[in-house]
Image (cartoon, rainbow, N blue to C red; front, side, top):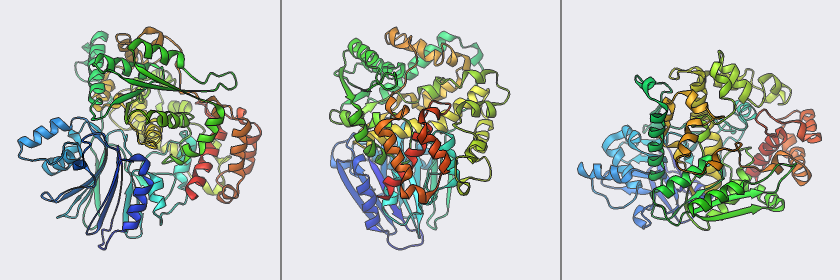
Length: 591
């Protein structure tokens, strides 16, 4: 819900109204319903609004509470805002609007930094305190809502997307070598605070940062769930874990039904999205709209899972919409899809989500989606081998990394290679820190709090918000994840992964959707690159801009272009698509 931006000059002076306006204009697709800009002293705040809660102008942003001396721009949704409002009213606070934005303002005034721990939801917000001059930045526990920032001259700029900051000018857009190493190692994931640009950073999930008037700041992580068994968990049997999980899932889905507009669901036909449909139906949602997308097959690989999404839609009587994308339409949509990315993302299903969101936005403004279940409940193939691991860093890296540091030496140009394995260092730091009982727990924690944030979560946010569509992800309800973190790994890895989730799903949805080979959001044309797709990548990598940038060794690029099908990463991604997408994204930002 919405796009936020702003500029603050800690050394005094007026913020650039033109820069804030440029950023806000760039965020227009995220919030097509209304716009606002407020300047006070050294701070300028901009906002683009998508009306989901309190459709009146009373919840217009930037929101200013003159009595409290607070201003806010906020992107997201606080699902328990009504309960928090009631609690704040008991403390004597009065409200002039009916939405969640004002609740955040009052909660900050009442509880300070502790307010974020009370929020159930997805959020990125910035609050300015008039009297103290402080600026507060906060991001939700899973980074579902983005928040980028950059130092530009004597100013700090922030926005919901990286391109919005860049378009305002003055940003150092040199490539960050360590970020490039991460990109090539983790199939495009660049963990915070880095981005591919040296001059732009992003606030980490579950983080609150408070700037003082002089520009100094402190930040802290306010949520870090233990992946450990509690005392007494050993006595909990399988049936009880299932009951607890089903109860938590019901609550997570119910929380995300809150809206003053209809809520639909993205239905891939897999277990995760099908379970959401079943729980919505169980909760009494009527006239539920569901949406699926499919593509032409390539190289003998089917490009849709309509047989399963149709089954669920018919079983629960949803108002189902299918979109089939011919190859010509897919090709035409790729430039728009790449332009909609806040950062370069190589997953093939970006274009699927982009085109699906275009269709969905013609019907609803809010959808629930199934991202996160694999990372939370152990659905990926690299988890089972870790059950008996004696070296989690090496074993995880062997299954997950696209390439080793040594391999990268022969692929990146020497000037772009860090002098050490920075991606390996990152894995070691995250995997080996305290708070996880087993190697599987360590890997699930890393994937759910780091890798997930800058791959599926960012992908869904970028592609849906490109069409003014808000996506809510119940599998990332933080209380649900806290419960899942306690469930023994063997319960998750049963039944070829997500065993306990499948057990619960059997109580809600038809077994035919559960007892089948694991599927993905297939876009085979981008996996088996040929014809016009190969020509497009060849043009991008042979362009003058690419040659001047010189990120990759020419002989490596020639090998990729000569035989793209022979260069597939361990996670079955195309190396050519990975390097070509990066170059196309960089060129799109320079237009």
